[in-house]
Length: 334
Image 1 (cartoon, one colour):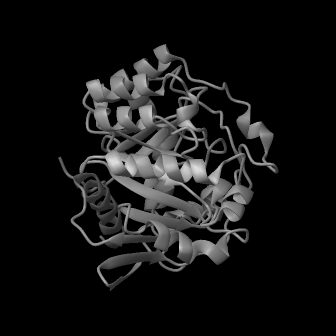
Image 2 (cartoon, one colour):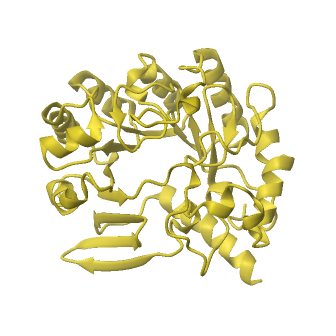
Image 3 (cartoon, helix red, strand yellow):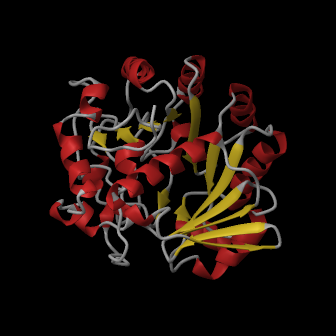
């Protein structure tokens, strides 16, 4: 099977996020869902997806996208859901790789040990300060020392197959500590990711030159707790392409709505879509510069997203995603 999409009909998705819970135990100041200045209409969906519906979603994905990576999370804190270990276990039983992002506050020793035993592939740990004052100012409701201890324990017991990253959202409250955060974690994790807030497609940098189709439209999709399907995590509610509780997932994936938006991107007419016209997330992996220093690879899409990592071989999952993106680029020059 080719990795090069030639039409708006897509190959099976490489990743699917299933929002098991919409709830969060923190009020991070930059969060549009749960933060102190959040648009609370975005949190109106059901707080949880039922176990039966989650199981049904996995079964459908297994039928048409058996190699997909499953993320049991989207806009909530996954460890706040008491069922999360069982949900991960079910996905692993069905031979899916799994991974998610967590704020680390609930990552106790038992949960860490279970995540390692279950063979979770990747975990992103959100931390937004190098000091207690800054971290707790940004992630309201967190305890810096406890969170760091939780993360340190997981790093101590993990196996070589588990990929762990530190995720940082750069903003005025913590930009003075970014270099400290990188230095604090770079030798302990697989990579440190630093990005600006990119919620709701609020175009901050207006990248126009060299624009390419957004890889998210071919790589995967999200299933919200109410069953709505959205094409990327930057569009939690604004662009709904179908509902998984009323229409089969495979039918939505290559349905009219998805084909229409992919077609706009393939023909360079993304500005005709009200959301895509003001979104810069497409630049992820496209407007990229790389530098190497002292065994550390720095990849930067200035100024949106920067990763710092020790140089090592890429994972099969990242190779597959890059091949998909390469296929999209080739279409444009044919």
